[in-house]
Length: 169
Image (cartoon, rainbow, N blue to C red; front, side, top):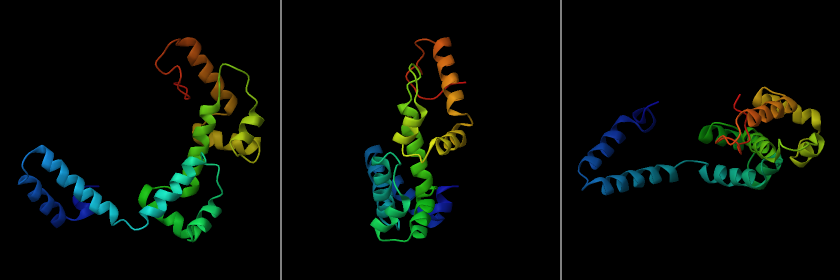
């Protein structure tokens, strides 16, 4: 998708003309920043999505989505629509991604792993729910993921990805 398709050709032509008459790169960047900020402020639902996504992030995804819409004073459908329009995913999907990311960062491949404690601590209903989510995000079972990660760490000691949570297999 091009800028013309999003903003319309006349708006892009007008911005291009203003940029062409600017006194150097600094003024050009200032003009562009002002235009982007103006358009950002006009975005319907941006404040709602910003606030709700920050709540999701602060809770590492372990939040009840229904509670978020009630707290925001909007329907869950409205909240989901604003999220899809502005960031491309629903709040539920964003929360799932945050929760999964926090869980993966909590895994220490060097030591023993209590999968039940890990799943419960991350807010999963049970170990089966955790396993399903893990496979949905990685295509691997949690046990297989740790095996791959441990093998990578053995085969590539001191690698730049040594401290990273994802296997490079």
